[in-house]
Image 1 (cartoon, rainbow, N blue to C red):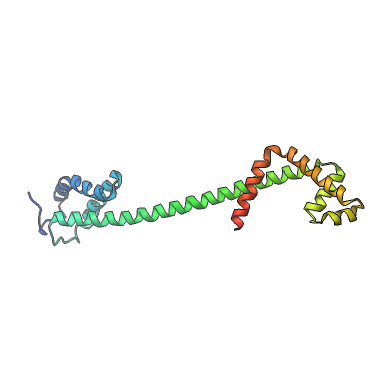
Image 2 (cartoon, rainbow, N blue to C red; image 1 turned 135 degrees about the horizontal axis):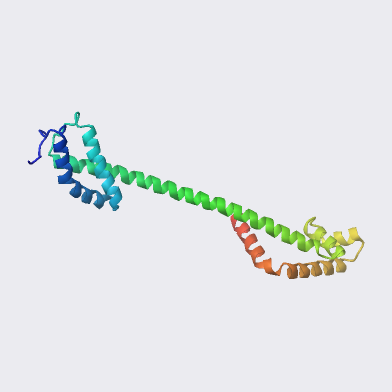
Length: 191
């Protein structure tokens, strides 16, 4: 029983089963050559036969059955390739957005931790040293302005700043590399 031209009676269940048994494996190989995925290939071929059965009363094959089936597999495979590319693009975009959110959360945690450690180290400075350091670094006063405000010499201001920096380096020794790296990354982001 050879089914070649449009005179094939597709409403007959036996005919449909014969077409399936005859063409399933070759069509799967053809779909695989396009999709490079056995599961996807089998899914495409099954869709072709399911559509052929569902539309059996309205389908009018004007070429050979073989050509019709291969063309159907070809078209569905092309559509599936397009869908997979779009899905892959969305997955990559989602992964990048997820990574960006993860980085933002991580940076926020690191920033809070560093801020806490720095504030703690500053709080541990001797009172006069801390006052001079805060006026210099947070209020951006010059050594002369600090000296005038605190009624001390500029040399004393310079010595207190040097002492504060030395103590901060000692207290933040384990975090120095993280602090430097963090602020370098922030500078790069600003460029």
